[in-house]
Image (cartoon, rainbow, N blue to C red; front, side, top):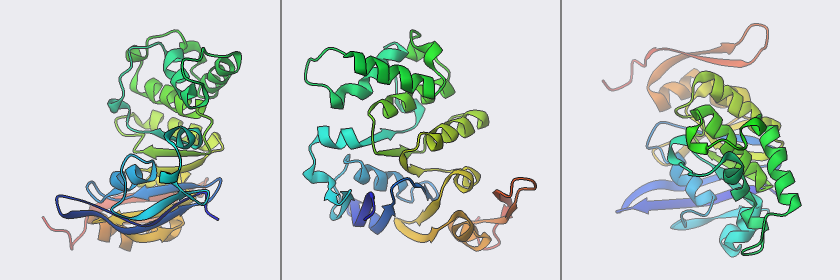
Length: 261
């Protein structure tokens, strides 16, 4: 049984189908990437998978249970979400921001326990931000903010991390650093990405969307072919292996001859 699974989910707005009968599954321990151009339905699909939006049809299951049969508290104990840094502004210290991840595990109005404090310290250490604990979150760099928000997500002690384009607006170094930390966390991960090379390097499997549909799926090597890239993105690409590491590499070479200008 898949840990996280979307079963033929659809969602429309103002009569326009944004996600059209999409099925997707994530096995325990996997990092599964969701790719596609802007407007293809990636974020809309993820919002259904983390209970932000109810699908018009179909269902999403977590460990065999429809996620809408779980209470918000139960769901937050099992699934944590990380989006783009620019969407988050906190007037708190770094430690206070990360402590928010403990809320699903606390009784209402409970004081932070010694265990809560230890979890927060451990998560800040895991992402390399323990030295920032007393800093104001708003004064951090973009890369530091995303690492702190990842620590907050990890502090929920979730089974699943859902990440919606978490590397947008970050410098290349911080993009790689964040994805490395996500992989090292040992969590099951569903992540929407723009960068094909980051997806190829960090994802075990990939789903590629276009026009609200999944048009191909598989390992990075099987999904990120020049033919699929041309079809979805309208560009020609060279796909090979990096010398020394053997990692899959995607190089964009030109607009596809079939792309509309």
